[in-house]
Image 1 (cartoon, rainbow over the protein chains, first blue to last red):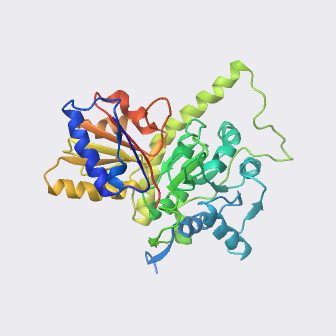
Image 2 (cartoon, rainbow over the protein chains, first blue to last red):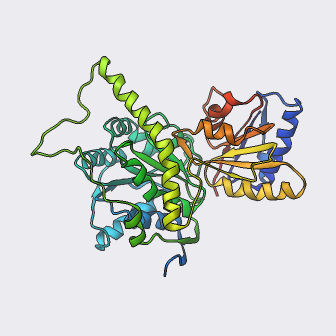
Length: 42
Length: 353
């Protein structure tokens, strides 16, 4: 999985990464998927 | 007073660390967000607080070229740059490492144009990873400053003799004001010996540096550089401990861990984001998550064995990169650790504040 974000990095974004990481562990995401993380920067 | 904390800008703390490391020659060209470091050093030199030659030059290429000459003549040298300035040095970075000159440079990490962006990512230093320079990444201002004398001690080791860069995130660390302990001159003199290279440019004993090498000998030079990097793997750890003995501060040698031992999910990263990740881990741990952090301090040499050992129990590894190899769909940290795992996550973040 690849995620693109911007500006500085808030705790909420890191928490969201961990959530997505657990989904990867369950095989729900595929490696090449691109995820837009900009929503976490609000 | 020993260990008295003061609130200063990150750039000032780094400049002060350079000053007490007693360089003989400094040369740099100003570029945001590195400028404050070299402004402070120029002020120190102008005020007579440093016994060094501060060389004004017309470009970053000239700055590193001047230091190559100075270092070959036996001087302890320093420069600082960022982004496009580091890219302009690229050709000469190979000369510095190939001639085994222990030049020290602070890279204030900034994104590369285009589009023009003065804010922080780590694409600039990562793009120089194969130039033969040691690269250490700092988590905060104190580490950015404390790494300076450590790098001199590592780079000037006769069994290493490689140039080295310490990387600090632009603005996030270079322009932040936070409490730090400024390095004391007496302790730094105790920790860092005088630089006394055995082989120098000397009119009384003429010799050549960087002379022509045909294919049969060229690879021997590269082989010896790689062997020196292998020596640095151990020396970085040793020097971190020696620094701790003198100053009482330790940041990890090659890597550092935070709540790592039982972690099933591990986040790996470099630089200032480490502090934010620790806060996130504290929150997640309080909610029952089995999560920890692996801070990669040394990117070159890359501590592959230490990392494999540190995260052998992890089920998921998150690599958090502030760079991307476009076309590879990965950042550099992900590329380095990927062979060791069957599950990976790559995240690219260009940050600034």
